Amino acid sequence: MEYRKTVEKWDVFEVTLSGASEGNPFTERTVRGTFRGGQECVQADGFYDGAGVYKVRFMPSFEGEYTFQIDGTYGGGKQEGSFLVTAASGENHGPVRVANTYHFSYEDGTPYYPIGTTCYVWDLQSDERIAETLEMLKESAFNKIRFCVFPKHYDYNLNEPRSYPYEGTPMDSSVLTKENFNEYTFRSEGNHFDYTRFNPDHFRHLEWCIGQLRDLGIEADIIMMHPYDRWGFCTMTQEQDDLYWNYAVARFAAYRNVWWSLANEYDIFPTKTTKDWERYAAILGEKDPYRHLRSIHNCIHFYDYNRPWVTHCSIQRQDIYKSAELVNEWRERYRKPVVLDEIAYEGDIQHGWGNITGEEMTRRFWEAVCRGGYPGHGETFLNPEGMLWWSHGGKLHGESWKRFALLAQILKEAGTGGFAPYERCSWDEVCAVPETEPFSVVKSFYLYYYSFMRPSFRDYYFDDETEFEVKVIDTWEMTIEDRGIHKGKIHVELPGKQYMAVQIRKAH
Image 1 (cartoon, rainbow, N blue to C red):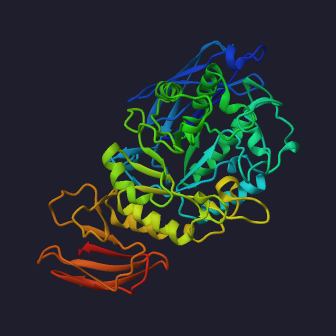
Image 2: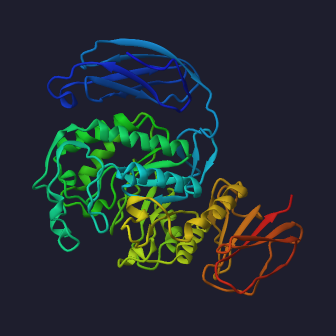
Image 3: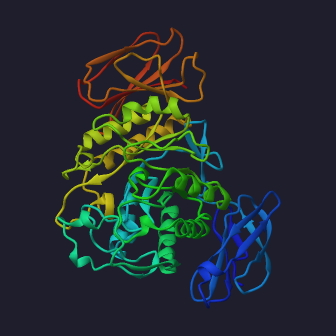
């Protein structure tokens, strides 16, 4: 038995054990840990990591002395040990939780404002491409990324992945062309995978990717299942699915930056029903002792986000034009955080979901935030290499991603813990105010956004006594102009341009 004697709060504590390797340890053996500290007792399933090695992982939520016991049928007998949990350091704030109904914070109370991106199979590319993606993420304001466990079969993504989650061999991909790829969707003929034997190398690599994101302060929104498949993974049996879910949760749950996305576009799976999705959610409820965030993503029809296991809405827009404009409605309907994980992508491909401008992507971000939601980015620009950020990662070629840092700055500086849409503003503007402030009072902070409109001035009035600092923000040019301190009727001259915002804050 091997393990570290000290671990940081909310970090991964791992016990490595030797055990049986004969037969099929993935289905015939079990290993489980019980971890006790002064304020918690947690039971966590372990997993077989190949070559006679078993592992059990645990994420401690408190400081101090812990003890643990390992048992199961793994072949190594009962084991015991102890370790010390030290204070969290640096940017380690713990896992993200829902806060104030519509928003998020880390477990230590630090507000978390998602600025997400989608990069479906960046984790299954070459080492060089993955390194390039991580460098790009360092330059950006992104603090959440959506990606898959399984490889993906779709337009601009017909290549084989670096590895597969199961032992076996895939169909001959040389038969695939842009013209015939639809013929192979949902098919498993020609594949020779054993869906009861996992490939530990595949999962170890995913864990390395999750760890790299954690160290960058980025949440790993893991898409557990998706329908874009030619390997048979999306049409496995109930028993095979449940084996996969239990194995993945045992491996990933101890990482503090994990979010669970049950599926990408759940409603176009060929064989899954609502009973299946509810069963997977029940596995999470039973097997994830850390209660990581959980949701499910739609293609056309929304899942019932009122289900108690759903922590937040993971939304793909249903209208070709409107997305952020509907955040108010979704907040009222579900009374949970609204995350627009797909509001279309900046790019130039043929699909309508993948060819909006950088200006429109930036507009949707600002409008969603001002309405109390959290938008997500994606990019689908054609390039000679055929590598699109939306799928492969690599380099970003667009313009919108450069402008999200300003929005993130505004969110943090506001210090509100999240915005709510201000229902008392004028009909022809969108305004955000602090979520937690009483409805009737003069707010401490107002953020007005004028989208594609171009006013040359605006007038504001709150009361006669309160002094406000006024700033004019050009969200596209990324400039902030201080307009001084005012009270009573406030007249603000504007440049008659699109994408302007006005920040009005109580003077200190």
